[in-house]
Every structure is written in structure tokens, then in C-alpha cells.
Amino acid sequence: MTSVTVTLPPEEVAAEHLNQEMRQRALGVIPNYYVTYEEHPAPLSSRQKLHLGWKLLVDPATFTAAGTTAGIQQAKNSYYQWGQGSGGFAKRFGAAYFTAAQNVFITSVAADSVFHQDPRYFYSGQGSKPRRIWYAIESAFSRERR
Image (cartoon, rainbow, N blue to C red; front, side):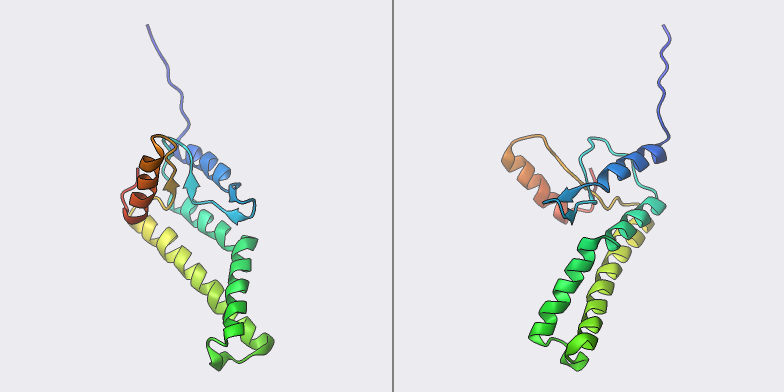
């Protein structure tokens, strides 16, 4: 008896998983790109990690979050040196957006590429509710990926 197993290269499998992840949204508007529901997901290449980070940064929800942060800072007159009005708002918006960009590119792209980590959260839909809650808490503090 002879058996033949045909599989796609891991990068193509990861690309398909990534395409599915890029359509995920929480509450219909918040990007949920860094969560995978696959039981055995293929690892992402550095280029795919960069693409995932870039997609998050150009998402309208990211601009909305930066605008909301800038608006709150404007109302509280945080960073008073920047002044009020559209000029002050633009400076606050730029600072909020580039802080988000820095966080994404340093932690989810550069560091994870250098250290061969996967930036995604691996959803566990198995086990009791307390076990799944513990899995989520444990995953938040552990860099070891499942």
C-alpha cells in the first residue's frame, strides 16, 4: 500500500491564514488581525509580519483611535506647549499615531522577526470556561507561543 500526502508550502498556508485574519473585526469595526483561530497555524515570515503591522496602521480604526486620543488631550490641554486649535490638534494626532506605529513596528514586527516569535494570539476554543480564561491570562504574560 502506498500513500501520498500533498501539502502546500508553509508560507502559502500562512498567507491563506493571514488573508482570513485580515478580515476579522471585533464588534464589526475594531481590527482583530492578531488573533488566529486555526488549531495549527503556519508560522509567519518577516514579510508577513510587516504586512500585518502595516495593515493595522492604515486601518481607519487606528486613525480614529489616534484622533480620539488627540481630542481628549486637546480638551485637557495636555502638552500645553503645542497650543490649542488645529495646529495643536495636528501635533497631538501625529504624536498619538506615530506612538502607535512605533509600538507596532518595534514589538510586533522587528522584535518578533529578530527573535522568531509569532505576534498573533492563538485562540483556544477548547476546555471549560475557567480553563479558557486562564489560557488568555497566561498568554498575555508568556512569550512562548502555542
